[in-house]
Image 1: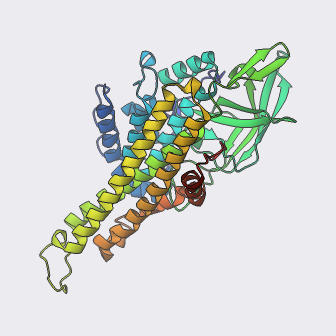
Image 2: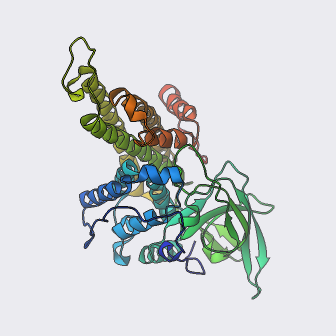
Length: 435
């Protein structure tokens, strides 16, 4: 997992798509980068406001989000976790998760892209050797790489063959197909995972996205999260030197995998990213509905006690109060889960199976609560906005569609069972691709 042998192009250098206008409205003037977590969260809110201006229109048009990724780069959010000495913000995961939540409130698709980017940008720290970590973080931060990933574990693994290059050096050559590959065409680099042919050895590697051996199908057309570039991809002969195989080192007999930390922390991280994605989408739904209620919802004239304004109607106030309270409670659980991740990151090289398992249980609990509250918010906002709020031009449906789509990523029933086994039997979930 050293830097790719060919520097990836920045998304700003890619030819603009005819169907991809710039994000409308004046972009914020960012003369300086924030220096505090609070400053970065406020920066994320500014980005969210910009994205929200035409999120519905871009979603309906299924536009390639190149301009939106450029916005993330210009704002500095892409290098939030990058080392300060290389131009990054040097922030921790608590801040990164709050940023994902804030951006998702403006556009769930872009929030997902940013969250996945953070995961894959961090992956070298979890799997790579010290030299690989240093090389990736320096180049990725300086050049503002935007990461995508083709690692969907529900599909067959990519197959890695060992072949000689023109110089006689052995290389890993990836071939296969994935039905999902988040980040797709708008990423600078793509994380691949495959298994060496005839073995059970898995290898992660970062490769330049723009190369003939990677072909994106452009077939992502779903109910929600429509701008995440998550369609299928064909991998046909991506060549990777052994030096770029994450966590693998040369030995006298060949190469050997030496992971940096216990098992993998990628799964707890991606699951807590999901939690904050869902909470952000729900926040966006509640804020959008509240603005509509204040400005456009009419009071019901046939009530027993008619009010002059919808904002004075008891059922409207009670509903907003209930949804706000539930969302605050879900956010508090998400913050608790983030604290466990921070505790692990503080001594990642000595993390125990018990620490990882307990963090995963709390994350599973936070995920189920975030989904249930988020879907309730996305549905019940219509109770307090009225029939006219169902108009396509209002676009209030985008929040429910986004959350409903992504919350099916892996069955929430299994998350509930994980928490149940812990509560009833004291069992911790065994590490897998989803726990």
